[in-house]
Image 1 (cartoon, one colour):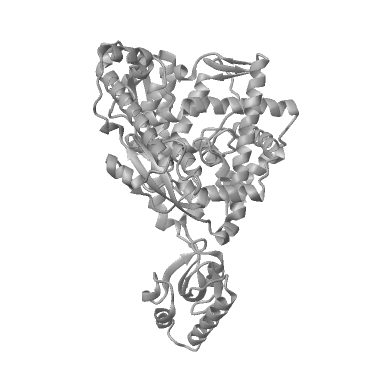
Image 2 (image 1 turned 90 degrees about the vertical axis):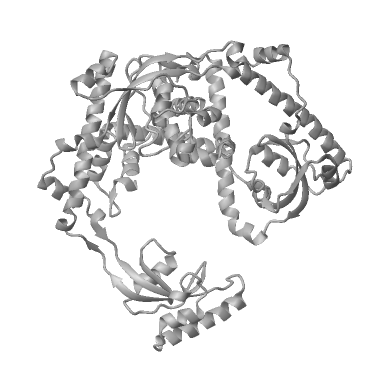
Length: 633
């Protein structure tokens, strides 16, 4: 997983997904200049980025990655991907773009902000802007309309600036074809493996261990450790304080009718005749066959029997073509249009989709309906109780945070509210403790004495106090001698394996037979089987070093320039065969691929422009790093 993430962390695809450089999201990515005295991190012109801003943005990044990769994503992966540096870089880029937009006189009209908000689905009801839905959404994220609209204006300004910079990106037909080949041309390889672990004749002297430690002291740093005291605010603990009246239930019902509605549904059967739309003769013959089957159905022959006899859909053939009830949006548009235009018992004309030719029959129709209030009253009551309990928990967590900021501790608040405060004891990122990863990551990013903002973990809210912190430190050799010796041993094994791999590769390039040489030297050789160049060999993943090596292979130069180190082993690849791309498939996907390449080129243009802006700011003395990001967060 980490190889994939590292490979794509700077690509336009993942940046779009994770909100890099500029993201005009409605909720995530909220970013506006703030007031008040906070600890400063970077000064750019007349704007100062604070530690608090970077820390918040970093936590947002962590949350986005964790929402994609789940609990597999942890602090160690965040370090390897450089997310702290990425958080600071993104904020620097936003400031640079904002300042440049201001210099160029770019502006966002109030009407543009209004249109963006009104057109967003989150604020619409039945396809139209709903002010109540808008205000409820803002209440959930604890922002006023004025604050939110100012934020959206800022994001739209950045989007305008970005659009201006990347508008020149173009991609030629030749570039599209070459890039498509690099990704989708299929190759079959032989892979010869040399495992460093097989090089066992390694000796280490005390002086070597000492010298290795001296050169690599930073790699053996004792990581930072913290001890926190924390409070958890669980909504269920506040349930007894909640009161919900009839008016509230009725208001919720009236404002959320769509949640209690059943859309129109039709119960359908179909007969599928597969065909080749690219072959006019085959298509005409199959259409003629479908028309004959339809005529039989119209004459009264049982549709289910006709489906069992003629349908090419293996999923529904044996059940007489029964697809059950469908709603709009569940099937392809052509099929949907036919199904919802029929009355009960009706049979459609021949419908052509990407799957083939269809004959559709509607057995039953259930019209759209809304459940009466009495039927859903208990459901609404439970929902409102839960929501109010959650709000009470959140409010008390806010009070704890305010108390902690003022008093520099939370024990007094816990006593006042009769709450149980918990203490973790010292832990580092490497320690496994009974603490949610979000709390753990936040605690390690903070300083001694800090009070965390309110953090939401599932339905629970948390606030903690960093009681003590032991900063990362360089150890003495005796503390880590075992780790140092093992690291040096692995390095020597790897050096020997690389030397041997290069010798083997030279022999192969001079004409030695790969399989004979492997048999003689007892090296493992595997055939990958055909795979797309851009996807990486099966079972090996799509790491960047593999992609580069494989992209360089041709029938004239079947061996890569050097061995590749992957998954702890050196691999020598030999190209066995190439299967050319499917031209028809390329033609059908060409424009989609072109759009992807244009976005990639836009990302490159934007990145280069931002780097030039940063260098210009540094040259003019308008950029100053006040503290290293790793130390700050």
